[in-house]
Amino acid sequence: MIEILKEKYKAKNKIKRIGIRPGEKIHEFLINNSETPRTFEYKKLYVIVSSIEKQKKGRKPVYISKGKKLNQSAMKEFGSEDNLISKKEVKKIFKKLGLIWFPMQDKA
Image 1 (cartoon, rainbow, N blue to C red):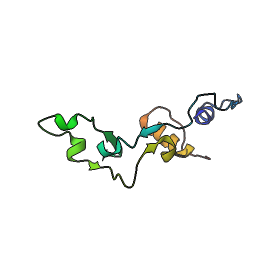
Image 2: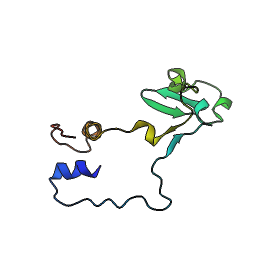
Image 3: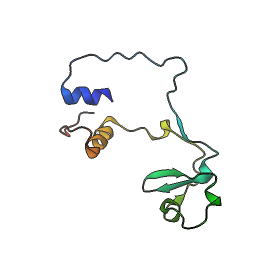
């Protein structure tokens, strides 16, 4: 978010919103309806297992053995619009990842 960087560096330049371009997507499908039967929730992540995973022999990966199979009736698809976060939440993530440091007195 450009507003966070402007705030951090006390930039005075203006932001010009130009809108969406022809063919540009606003949201992306991250898990489609054919992938939900192969999707596991593990440590706040979604893991989509390969369709050939069933053919493998041996020990199962941790995301299958300790993860939880996605509830297909509760979620048919998952897209970027399903999990929008606030400016304040983005700041917390940036700080946690060490991408940017700034005081957390947030007005967002």
